[in-house]
Length: 83
Image (cartoon, rainbow, N blue to C red; front, top):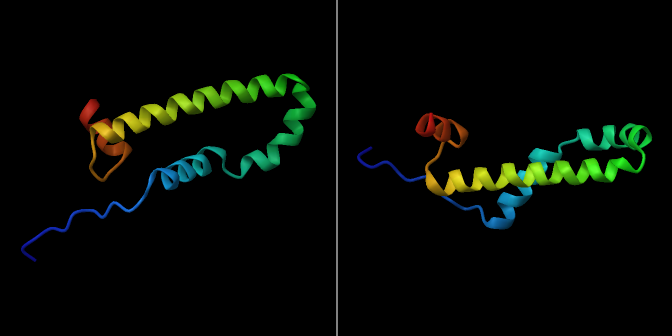
């Protein structure tokens, strides 16, 4: 055990986007969409647009941190290095 193998990076851009979308959307959208549409009416599209903008900001900031700290550990590493 003289060498430490590096973490294999096998995910592409499409893989990362799909994983991110799956994490953000989750299964809750399927159970919460009908009651939200009934309560909000036409304002639902405005709310979904605002939520999409916030999710985009979150995704881009996570991508910038991942580019700045390309090590395994994810959010733990970002917090340790930035705080």
